[in-house]
Length: 634
Picture: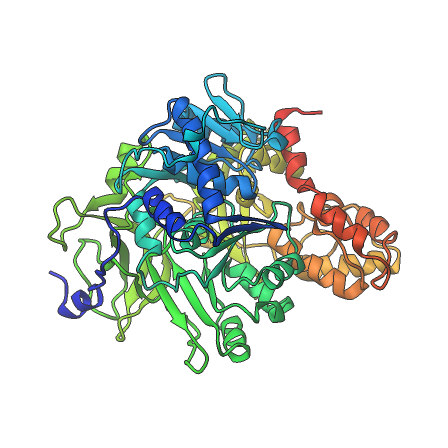
């Protein structure tokens, strides 16, 4: 039995359209407010009526290819208006979307194709050379000129499936060495965004879709406005600087914004003023900095700042903690209370409920719990188990692996992990998956990956490896090998060669004994020469926490990642008084090449139209070059 106090804290049931599907609710909104703006993308807009018709045409097209209830449909697309049309259409056809990030390496995309066995793939012409190729898959380019065979295609298709039908399959890192596909049903999405208390939804709210659709924050960003009559602003697909993000927030009138903890910190430090009009600022994916939270609340008294917590397996949010100006912000910010139609249990190793103040594993239950893992009954049985504390037939709970405790006021405090899983830039990562990829290299005998936080900086993945006695494996080669197998956010920032890995008395790797070296041997590249060289190198050295940066050292080989690159970008623009497209920093990744490129730029005060236009048109040079290498494209 649950303690009486915990039972009262879990009394979260509210009335919401539990028996409706996402498609049905969207169609209700479109019928009630056909002229209201549903989606904005750059200078384009679609009303709810227009979005409904375009999605209907694509849904009927999908039906003719055989898509029906729970058919998995691949979606390999960049952020765009077409992406939103595609997602709505897939659910209208009765299918479930499978996000396939075009930046993922070939090997990972091929695994996802094999695991899902999708019969249909939606993509864009611009990604024709990057989308994974499988002869058994029917590829549809959503931006092709397509004339529907009849005006009947404008009408809503006959519903297929219902509230318990699959809505999407989203992959997370797997401890067995392969990613796991989380199967989320329609009802779980509806529970997240309709008649709930995690944040305010409605026609007056403007949400920004900034997260990749392969990241479950996109569930809130997309369906939060579209199922409540709000407006969805889609961020352009190219790499965005903090300035780009701030400009979009201002120009589009965004009122609700979700940011990972690391990006939240950067925006507060570098572009605090751009958050002024935000009424609801949601942040999460990792522990929030109380200092940065206080800065927001002190400067914006009308903003509600929400610490959102939840695994993909419980559909984006499990708990939320809302804060406003005037409240006391503790150094350890709680993850809050279970949101509407969600229950939280904190149990000991024998699955007995714990009293407030006692630490145990957090379990999530309620209507947000996913169906399980695709094609993985063993992992499903291990993580999704019967809920003994709820009388509903078939009730299940998900064991998160997170350590937590109830506070006396009914909020939950996150205390860490009970295993080695980590969060980096909002992504949940199983080190075992990276270790398995490393061991697959013929010259790696053993490997261990841990996350280290350097001082006040963000956590970074550090890979420790033992080479075979015959081989002298270079870090560059190992990094390139992993980049061909894993998404960029899973490639470690630092690599440390070791003669052997330290072991604990029980024979397991002693992760606590693996420390980041306090200093590194200076590289063999030339030292900086010019004033600009020294400025760039000093900035890299400070942000990367490395003692030496040479002219030809690669930013990413020194441990840089996309978040640190945004910090470099913001600091460079202030330091040099030059507007720099952030894509330039992905392209010019050494001090020498970046200094040469920046030396040719015009200072602020001259025409900025050209660099802005170029930044708008450029794709992500870094990601595309990796994808080209993976596919052997010219």
